[in-house]
Image (cartoon, rainbow, N blue to C red; front, side, top):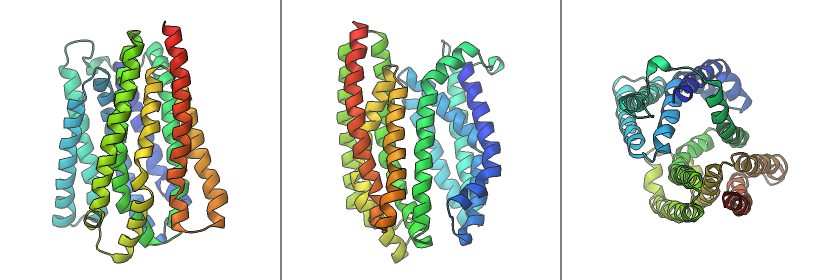
Length: 354
């Protein structure tokens, strides 16, 4: 407990410092247009100031979920989300703070969610109790956390780097395209969060049953997580596709921006449920104490494949549609590899358990 929260603080402060200094070079490297780079840099630097509290929420909520408590992290994030919207309206419309207001609203709402998670942990009376006076790093605990967490962290980092390369290609189509992709990408995140929530559930309940040597329950966890995660995500995607015109007009009324956003809806968001299939199986693999396997598959499928596609295929068939197809293609490749690995590893893991 105390090693994890201390690690969250150290990681958050480190990213804060690096982010402030590297914000502009990163945007320059991504080819951000000159007319937006100053405001984008300002936004990123303010956003990075909230990294310590973001880390505390992420690490603390993972602790609560590890015991099967997903309600309080959900409550904390929901409250923070509502406050974020209200503060956006206040800072941008009333106080005319524009980009600064949006960034401040994000940071302050993250402070609320992190504060609630800390409060919940401090109020615990069992082995989940957090005592702020006992915050320190214990080497043996740190090594156990790193052994499971580092591969998953590297997977996410590399995944983000591949998205940076794709975003650089998107930037070459101009500011209207950037705005359209940014607006529609919000609905990518909604779909991803749905799938990822079931992936996190698969980690929690697979690990509990694997530790209890209950192979049957492990299989049931995977099956139910896949059915519910993909099924609910498909319903959500169908709803967003049906109302995509109205939804995108929440962000913009510019016809050119809307046109670009519709392209992303039709190619990326429509097929986003495929992403859930490999996320859930990857979560089940981590629950079986095999964290390196899903990390390697994701690095090859969602990073190496995308870099090869953007570097080789896209320049020869240059269009926004061609570029966006990299997402569903990489999801299919990664999903096939992840399902195959899951069944192979599960068979071996259950044989070892028996």
